[in-house]
Length: 288
Image 1 (cartoon, helix red, strand yellow):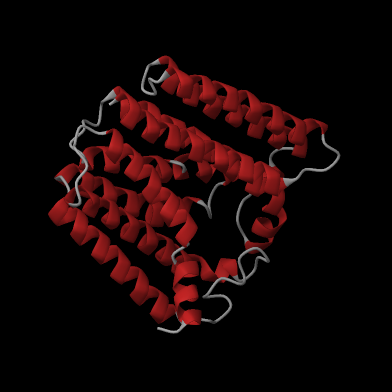
Image 2 (image 1 turned 90 degrees about the horizontal axis):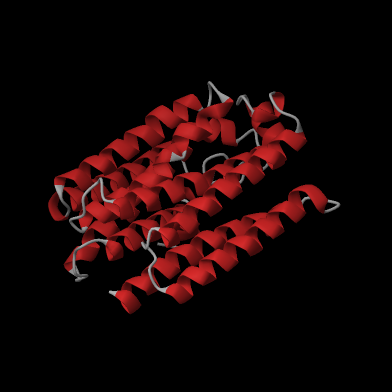
């Protein structure tokens, strides 16, 4: 395959997002009761393929809308670098490959979670986006379910407090991203025909809600420390300090800075999630 074609597939599958989803599932797998072996990583590969296929199919579903927005018009389908038939073929291949790996190498509950998440993302959430500006709330479930998939792939119970707290953190952490995207690209979504929160709230109200969601996700990460899911004291103090730094940066950018630096906020929020996950992985090895 030519390099340009490979890049098209990476863009079609939203490789960074699919990789992030897989990383959260892998973190949950490491925290689960199973001892990590090469065979236990096969479900993680299935989750990556499934996430890639779902993203590709979403672009197939929404390319007429993507074509109307400056933010998305350079994606493979609206830019005509790939045909709809090719996009559908790639998405189908990835989805079937991912589901087969989960079917044969993961517990049934993990497979069912993957199937349910696919239906929720490409069916329910994609439909709701065209009907309500609040689709972001049920949409955030798609980012939390991979936590349960990784955990159950390792033999963990769906009701274990570790996975519940971690999934809750991931659910809350996604919400400020959605609202920030609305703040930055709301006019583009409106022009493309999507209902937007900008028509319901003022810019100050949206900034306040973003800050509220960040405080909530910050609190959820501290709960991981308080309930000894992240048990090592040094790592716990580091997470608390990280939360204080993040909230100061967010408050300054949202309410004090002369102009909102979206890139800085996105980097800070993503780095925050990455450090929390890496801390949980490190805690697993130093305390386990």
